[in-house]
Amino acid sequence: MNQFELSTTTSEETSQFAARLAGFLKPGDVIALEGDLGAGKTTFTKGLAKGLEIKKTVNSPTFTIIKEYRGKLPLYHMDVYRVADAFEDLGFDEYFEGNGVTVVEWAHLIEEQLPSERLTIFLYRDEGDKRKMVLTPKGERYEHLCKEIFR
Ligand SMILES: Nc1ncnc2c1ncn2[C@@H]1O[C@H](COP(=O)(O)OP(=O)(O)OP(=O)(O)O)[C@@H](O)[C@H]1O
Image (cartoon, rainbow, N blue to C red):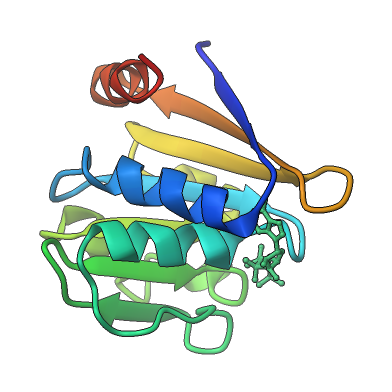
């Protein structure tokens, strides 16, 4: 399995990388975003939103489950932690077929319901402000996308 890694030393750098990644995304793309508390998931998603030309402020979706933002492409930002068991029953899987880009936090809890093709991104805290990002593409489209980004 191909993996792509990078380290950032400031939140701006994480945000800028996400904004650049946004430029490669298409309707229906799914990003599974994982990382401990304070790893930078919200920072990353804010950067992605900037890259999608979303004007509204992106906040953590923990209490709202899902938030939709309008931009160059819509962004569906979801935290499935509290709905994992009922994910399909609640119809949340329909977002994956939508015209936007879906960012799923705690995605491993709905592994079975995730599209087989997706981009998984793990954020790890390192010393101080350093963060490691590990991107794992599943499927040809995302492999190609990662190769383009890391070229
Ligand atoms: N290199 C970095 N990349 C991302 N964030 C960084 C970095 N360095 C410092 N930070 C800071 O770490 C914090 C990350 O918080 P953020 O809310 O993005 O994390 P999170 O993974 O969404 O956490 P939570 O699960 O608690 O919502 C922010 O205060 C951010 O400014």
